[in-house]
Amino acid sequence: MKVIYRTIIITFSKGIEQLNEIFEDDTQAWGVSTLKQWIDSYESTRFTQIGENTAVITSEYNMPYVLEWLQQHATITKRQEE
Image (cartoon, rainbow, N blue to C red; front, top):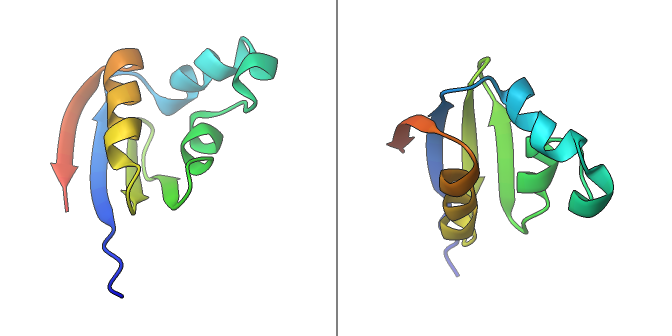
């Protein structure tokens, strides 16, 4: 069985530290305290920060859900699919 992962590089208009505030304000409700922890909580999905406001996200099958949430809660200035 061949497993295919999608990889995207996302640049946000705000720094990732600022985006973490979404979770820090109500850690108990979210169950996590950072954007990385939230994305990593999706099975087979990983978040790697590569700059102040840039990250690489890889996912086997949850990418549509992660992207939908990001589009609703963060301003994406650049998205590059690898």
